[in-house]
Length: 116
Image 1 (tube, rainbow, N blue to C red):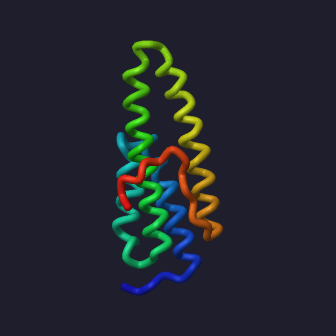
Image 2 (spheres, helix red, strand yellow):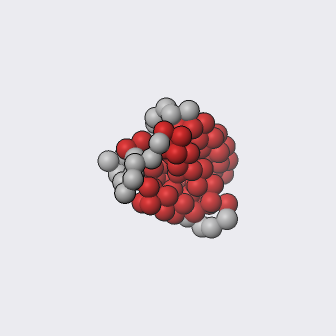
């Protein structure tokens, strides 16, 4: 496959992060969206490969944190954790998209590195 130019790399890396917002349309869209774009473009750019993995790792971690929070609803704290997670989810995705569109590698805090 042909290599991408820098502008295309930035655009596809940004799309990998923003695709997580698909969770508001499709259950587990936060994992499915970034996974699809990463799989399609990872061989064309090391930057897209890196940012796609980063987006996937965060989305998998985020899903685990949400499941734990749902369980903790029984003792009430889960409600507050879910609200905090939702805010963190949106803010971090926007920051990641902006940073990757500027060509910077973004690292999500609290992300477990499942895919290396």
